[in-house]
Image (cartoon, rainbow, N blue to C red; front, side, top):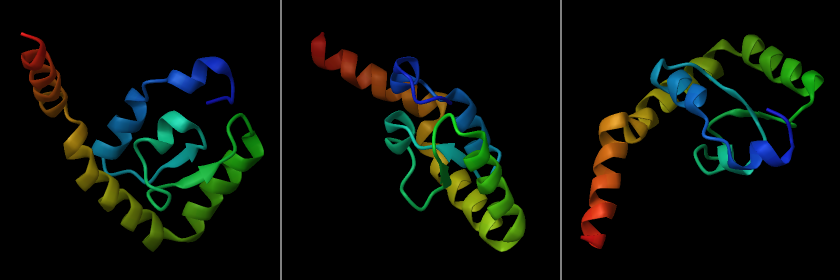
Length: 98
């Protein structure tokens, strides 16, 4: 992701897929991603900075135990972002207006 206006309101579908797959994540430091991931849920990289992205990937490669731990944590966290859970939240919201 880049640090531009379009990225400010992104819906990070790929992030949810990586989480559900149990992958460790190198995330662009953007507000939309910070809403989903806690500070210690990912290796953070400056948005739009390929060098920072490469450094984040290298950090995970250098510490496989940390990468595995992040992946496990994200896998557990992904359950709250499933389509079923999202649908139930939307249905609940709509019920308030009916």
